[in-house]
Image (cartoon, rainbow, N blue to C red; front, side, top):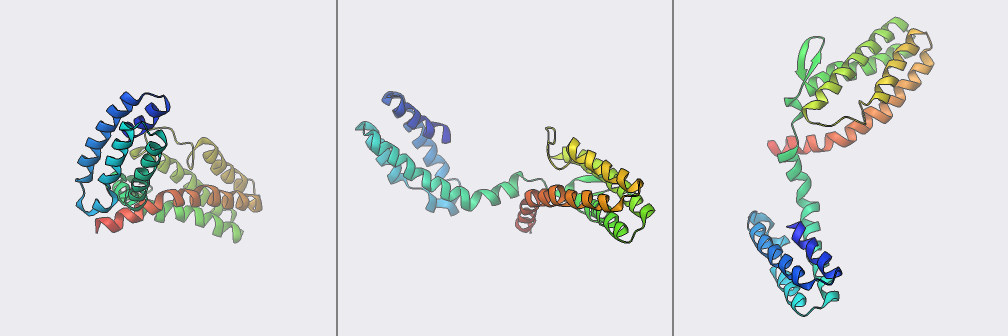
Length: 221
């Protein structure tokens, strides 16, 4: 539906009213078809506006054509903002609990692996640093490094392109650096690295992924 709609304005800008009319006919047919697909969304559609667009095209009224397309677009935008997030979450978002992650006790669901091992290792590193327990902090950081690598592999269940955020090479290098700094005995610097990882990696990954996951979970109940 979007292609012929934008095609109308493109052709009008080019002075090609013939093809603008061809695109209008395609758009109108698709508009009518799509408007019947979800009865609950009838309030978003306005066939009178579409008919007005057709009439203004016949008159070669360029100013009115752009006004009509803008008005129709407002209805599209309202539907998108109200309905698209839930639809995408329900039908296009993969449930994290269907993704398995390798852990020291075998494969666990994403949520269980995150809570028990990744977050546990991250928080454990911080607790041991604050308590001055270098060896325990090192053990936690080694587990954290291992789990980050395992989660990076698990990301491939949804993502088919290289990851440039959250588990990218620079992030993994910082995780290793934290471990090495702990091993060298500089716990204060290690804590600085850990906190930065929490802010730039953990938190931002959660901001991006968790809203859709929560929405999907609620809609599946």
